[in-house]
Length: 183
Image 1 (tube, helix red, strand yellow):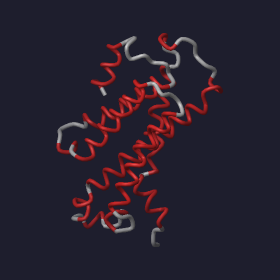
Image 2: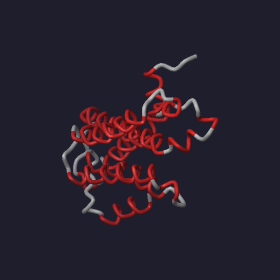
Image 3: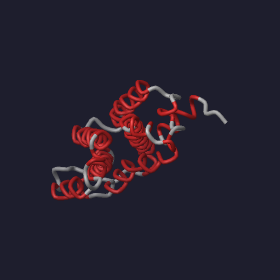
């Protein structure tokens, strides 16, 4: 059965595993909502829209990472007989469209986070997450271990913790350092 354009884009974005990445900033927020540095803990019903925006932030980072990864690996994938049905390899999606999807998803992460906070620490952590994820996709597979990928996910968690969890990275710099280095 031939794959339609919607199915091809969904496969490119790997939506079947999206929820895991999308939950990362939500978990960061929920874990730190009870942290002493955050002051009072809001009732759960009051933060549902913000938690949903954090979910969207994580989902868009997922789209960015997987689409950029597929674009970066296109030539390697073309050489494999087993990967000829992938959306970029088969030509169902052009490399230029994939680049645009990745760029728009990356920009969208900041817009979604903006629904929750304009805190520069939260946006800085998200920027670090995007940059490390992009670096992993483009160059990180040549490095031992997945330090760049682990750092990207850790900074995504930290962005949620700062954005809604009230985590102050200057309140407990040793915890912030452990989060960033320990990934």
